[in-house]
Amino acid sequence: MNIQDLIRYITWYATENDSSLTTVRLVKFVYLADVYFARKHKGETLTHFPWVFVNFGPYCGEVMGEIDKAEALGLIEMKSFDSSYREGKEYHLFTCRDDDVEAIEEDIPIEVLFYLKADIKRFGDDTPLLLDYVYFDTEPMMEAKKGDLLDFSKCKPFIPTKPIQTKKLSKDKIETIRSHIKKLVPKFERGHFKKEKDKIEMAKWKDKIYFQALDMMEEEDLETGLKGIAKIVR
Image 1 (tube, rainbow, N blue to C red):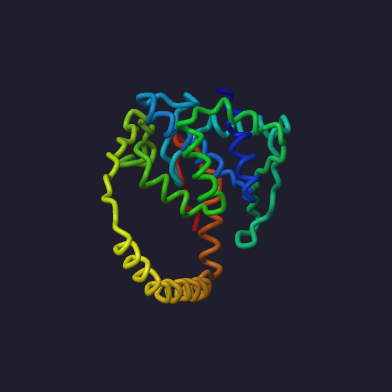
Image 2 (tube, one colour):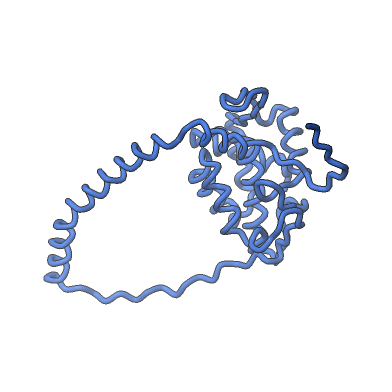
């Protein structure tokens, strides 16, 4: 399919779910589309582009070029902003509010679309969680080292599990289960309260250093292959 259409759809679906995509997140979602396609097509990818393991995971110069073209053609919108934590650093956010984009959905293979939509909803605003998923739950990144060309032939289809046969319960047993569930409700409520309390406590640790680290994650990865001599000036 047209890669600019894929980029346009990903950006549109994220916008529809109240997420603005950074460059890093947009690139990683295109990578995931390749992973899901490869699982069904013996290692063949949707983009047919090469991916390399760089600083923050999979990187593809060709995908970066397609993003630039999509933005130049007005297919997606880009807004730039200055970092609050790193002086002189600029970042980009991508959105798309074109209702016609929904028709592109028909061109995206169902084996890609199903998982990709779920990923965008889950990771659209969470770079650390997205990078964690890409690093540890996608086959091309497993055992890969920085600078390696990623091997999508490692992508394997999921083997469906056999359905579990459940026994039919009597009315007495159903009532017993319901009574036990009612007793558990206060425990669930206490657990929810503790979870909210933990969130407030965690927020105290999100200092300037924490947000600087997030800013570094949002930097555009550099392509590998640079050569030269580094000189340290004292």
